[in-house]
Structure formats: C-alpha cells, structure tokens
Length: 253
Image (tube, rainbow, N blue to C red; front, top):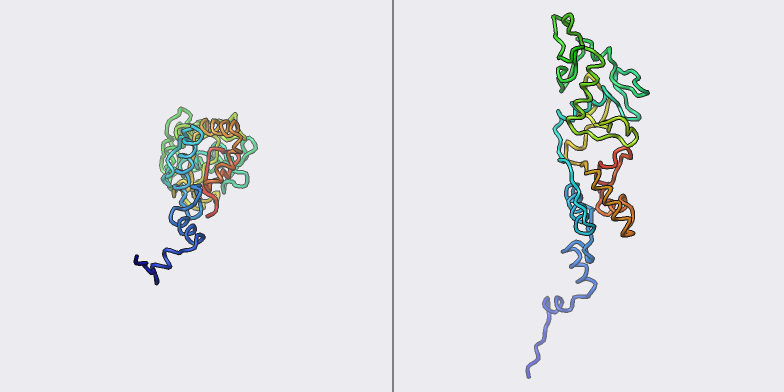
C-alpha cells in the first residue's frame, strides 16, 4: 500500500487550526449566529432588515413613507409649520411673534410686500379675507385684496394636512403639529430659523406607520422580547425625537 505524503501549501490548508477556520467563516457570512450586524451598513440596509425581521419574527408588517424628500417640498412644509406651530423647542424664525406660547413667523413680516420668499411661493401661503390669493399692485397690495392673518394661518395648516404631516405627541390636540425640518441648510426667507437640512432629503430618515409600531410594541411585550427601542437598536436604528415616535434614523456607524 502506498502512503501519500502531503506537504507544502496543501498540508497547511488541510491542517488549518479550527479557530482560524471559524474566523474565516464568520468573515464570509457576516456572523456565525446569523444575527444582523449594523456596523458598516447603510440606513436603507438597516431599515430593510428591521422591517423584514418584524414581519418574520413578530408577524407585523410596518408601512413607511418614502425615505427621500425633495428639498423644495421640505422647505414648503417647514415654512407652513413655522407659520402655524413651531414645535421646535430651541429654534425660532428671524422675525417672530408669540402665538399660543410658541415663536412663529411674525405676521408683520409675512404681510410685508417687500419680504423675500426663497425656495417657496408666497402665493401658496398668503390669503385675503375672502380666502383668495392676495393681489399685488405696484409695491404693495390692491385695496380689498390684502393678506389676512387668520386666513393665511389656516392656509398653512391646510398645506400641512395635505402633506400628511403627523401630530406631535406632546401636542395631541393640534393636528399636523409634528416638526418639519427645512429643505435647505440654515433655512431661508421668510423663516430663516437657522435649522439644519432635513435628513429625509438624503434618505437618512424614515417615518413609519404609527399603528403598526404600536402593534409591534404589543407583540414584543407579549413575547417578553424587550422594548421597541432596544429592538430597533439591534438594527442600528433609533428614534431621536420623543415627540415623533414614528421617526427613525440610523445610530452612529
């Protein structure tokens, strides 16, 4: 009988230590236990994994709005929000006045025909007493067609309602009062609150279905599987704003 003697690279490959083999397997598939590893993953990958696991493990299908948002749309909704509510605790327009204890865009600034409107159209917001778009005349407004504060603030609310903006958890009696970040860094006229650009524009945040999230919380509790925030953290996600529990972003890489 002839015995085959193995040497060189072939021998080293055949007699690879077990620890090295396991390390190689881990690197090739991501994890030995199959758990999701968020490090190095994009926000989209993290969110997709979370939604898939919620359905597979807990039978909950969670709806979501589009991650991406046009800068112009974000700015339009932001200005409407700052005319109506301003739910931001530490931010106020450059020209502001107090309305129900909040700093909103001052009416004197909105009705001023010399005010600049950047990235948005004043015609979308201003309304006269009859609910129509005010009429410009020379450097001012035509008689009988001046902007009306009450009608204009109601029009801003209509914009938020049409956009499907949620209701802030800490302002439950004020529909569509959730914060809306500006579409452009630092904001712009007529607001100029200095706010940061919305993460929705770059697909770095998502708004999930509120009813489905509540159902998922119930399922996690029933299964004694921890809190929703702990579950999100497994996928590298978190809810940074307590007033908007449907809004999720990625944690640090």
